[in-house]
Length: 372
Image (tube, rainbow, N blue to C red):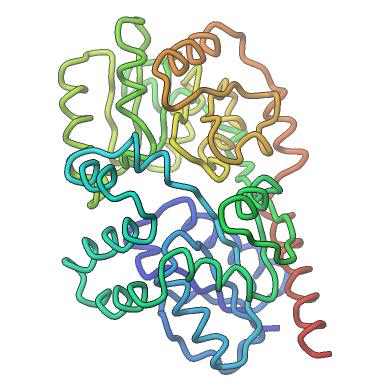
């Protein structure tokens, strides 16, 4: 069996949660003997491959092209959609010129086409995809891929409910949860506290995009006296948002901003923090919430998305649209004693080894059905 993991063209140059998921899936599939490679090409040569595994339906102009390529070469296709509904973020969470246009344009297809047009201005390779989306429609591209792949590999049952509600999708699916790196359990606070001279603070690990809602978190914690540490990378399409964050940081001595960090230092930051909070407008699960839980943080997550299927009753949840909700939830978590309940539950149910095994089962089932 030979598998191609096929994903967005900037998977490595603009890393996100899907980058980690794909790399860990590759690593652990290889550990159990599966021949697997990654491609970020839109039309790779698929000779020799038994299955194409696509990721991320958020930017269907790429996924659609990769899906069509696989079907043209008569290869079975499975898809991990990582589906997110950005409607609320577009209405309430955007900044700068993005905010103006997202509030002005009511139609989803037009809105997403405008986003793609902005990307195409600085990337000539996207012009063809822009015209493809103009012809077929953003939502229609999503629906065609989701409805016609051989199998869906979803991160949660909640994701399937969202797909049914938003897009009317009723394809067969398998829940293959994200894994977690168990080495976060062994995190030690010493490295971080020695370098930054700070401990028992509120931590938010998230790249600096407005969907992560850092500014609302900053405003929520103002005048609470709590120390806040923000760790992430600036995003090229959210420069205005990062400038606003930087301005707030310069005004507030209780905020520490870190844009470059090693994995060892990140693990130490989790261990040194009292609370990790992710007040995003949407999360498929929030891999950083899992890492923080393993390292012993009290975890606060957004109540938008699918995080509850991973974190259950062992985390607290805030409304990203309500600063008072973010504030009260973080304060409640900060005042609560640390507990191993979340860590133990995560270790019991989630690992990249289990993710790889479940993924392999789907591959085998897909090949058996395709060969009938």
